[in-house]
Length: 277
Image (cartoon, rainbow, N blue to C red; front, side):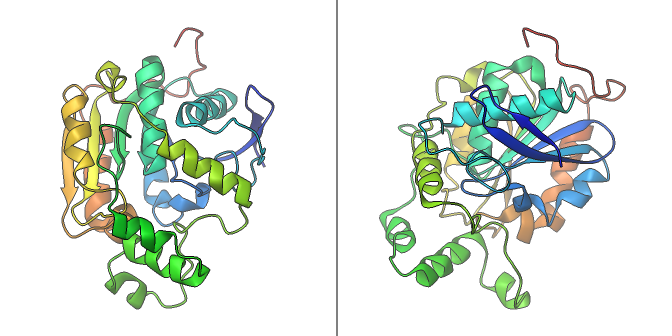
């Protein structure tokens, strides 16, 4: 099982699958690499995919320290790429993973070929926050009621109904300790990349479901307008987990974007990172 270590000594678990140009897939808040289980195979058919467990989740260490932040998660991701021998990669981040991806692309442009930001936000104070009804639903003290509320925010009612008994990997790491959940929530809530977004030079695609209330859809045009020459793709009728429920219509444009035109990595392979990137 591949592990590497962050600068503070935190062990970070990751997996590499597939072949071709490298693609880093970043999961959402309080979720491990299994967030991508339902769609990873399609990406691995075209790319060398790298998935990881954020600190606090999965098989990574779960320190109860003040080391959780979206820029910090970005440094963790770069440590994983370094250990995997990948100097430059496409990056696809969804939800909090999209917030992390913003910092990788803004602060380390030499490491990113093409960037996809899914169901994410520039953060406060410029982003559009979820409404009070959503916050109240998620804050319910009954764990099962809170889980049902989260399921409804992630998927349309038809999706769970069509998949009875399914384990939904987007509802959080069930083994995650309470302290790590709190620190993930705080890290995501404190994200503010507004001033950094214009520094992103990688070709960028912003993807969002039109019916996303968990991370309101209005954040998508904000990101696309703030990042130079970014493209915007909205998935009609989709909620927060658009990449899973609507994979048949959401994955193809992402694949097309990652493989087309300048910025693709054909022939570059998996080079070692050169200092200064």
